[in-house]
Amino acid sequence: MATVDARSVADIVSTIGTARERWRVFGLRAGARPFLVARLAAETRGAIVVVASTSADAEGWAADLRFFLGEGEERTPLERRVHVFPAWDTEPLSGVSPTGEIVGERLSTLCALGQLRDPVIVTCADAILQKLPPPEVVNGLARYCVEGEEIGLEALVERLHEAG
Image (cartoon, rainbow, N blue to C red; front, side, top):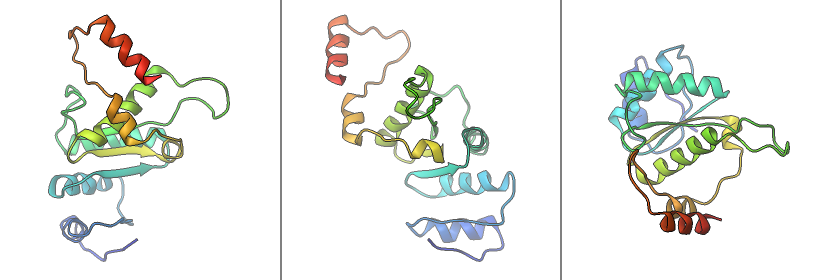
């Protein structure tokens, strides 16, 4: 992991943007952190992953990044760059499944990683510790549906059967 001695966000972006390695930046406060990541996302190519300490912090990061990137909530998942990868909303080994909303958002984010060119993924430590299916499984089973689109019952049953 590298460090950089910089005087401005532009210095940091120019230094980090040319290297393909992990970076840890210290000394930035409040809105300067998501502003820096948004500038990196705007000026560089490739996926960016932000790991926040809690789910609430991850949601805050995502909101700030969407603001700085000019990305509204009305965009569809495949039109967005910023995606939240949430942690399960249940305790491990509790025997309770996470809510459908959490499962859906996790799958949507995993699909975005496989289909979008330069996604910005915001997550928390708890979320990245949970086991995930391999990318080829997620991408092979994914199907993007638009509200109002009709899917044949037989095709849906076959797809669900394939997914297990």
